Length: 340
Ligand code: KG4
Ligand code: ZN
Image (cartoon, rainbow, N blue to C red; front, side):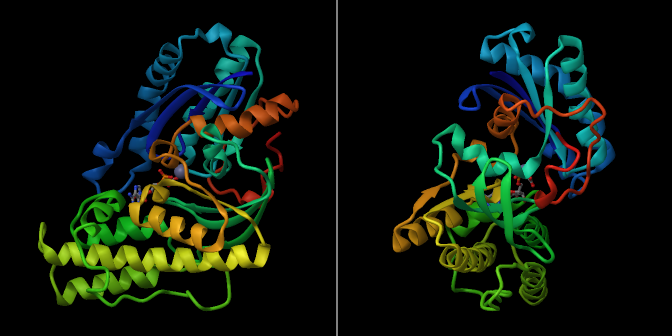
């Protein structure tokens, strides 16, 4: 099936054309980061308006780059949630409008389902596998038994890993979003320079907590003001990144032990982090398991990732009803309910 995929859950307007859930023909991502950066975070009202302005040009660009016309598209896959309600509605309405006008099916998906399966666009992974999803809104461990078959093993009880990166970067005066900036500075710093906590690392659960780590960064900066650019920011960035990676690696190792999974997928925007990619590489080598981390362009928000589960559902006749609503909060364990 030739699918058009649309993603507008947060601050990226994205569209892609993918054949058979595997062959990526185009992937266009129009980021609003520069607009929101001056407010220090995403402003929902501005995000919706910008999506509205960009949705048609972005879809047209995706079709043009794929070298196909709208008449060749056989189905549409779109993010239904979770995310900003107004932002989601722009993508969902566009998907419904095209599906209705063209008489083709569409399916509304969970955003994280896309992140989980994005790596299939580069190389299919055998089920079952363990997945660590680390993004701006999620830090979750899932056991993935097949498309649509996800069991949550652990999750953050407060901030997500990406949120911790962004909030800590803000405290250090690195701007928004600061994950990639911390990553760059950490390469020049000493990870042992600042003693920071590893929250919940050895508590026996598979859950995470990152808000205490952010508070420790805040307290450190209050005592030792960070000058940018300079050694303190490099060392604090490296120490913070090491603390996050230690916790993520320890919990992932424990989840692999408990499930006996032989394959690991790491996904979401924070999976771009060079320290985390290296750490997971070491973990996989140690344990002799298969590791799959998508290329950075497929880790961050994009529409192409939705085509992997989208193709599966539409091929199985599981389209969404035209009455489908957008959902701001939505647990992965309940993805089947009302969506198809
Ligand atoms: O998956 P994503 O693009 O959007 C959400 O679904 O949230 O993830 C965005 C998050 C942001 O918090 C951003 O700071 C973080 O991913 N991020 C990084 C890096 N690149 C993006 N965090 C750490 N290191 C990076 N290199
Ligand atoms: Zn995302």
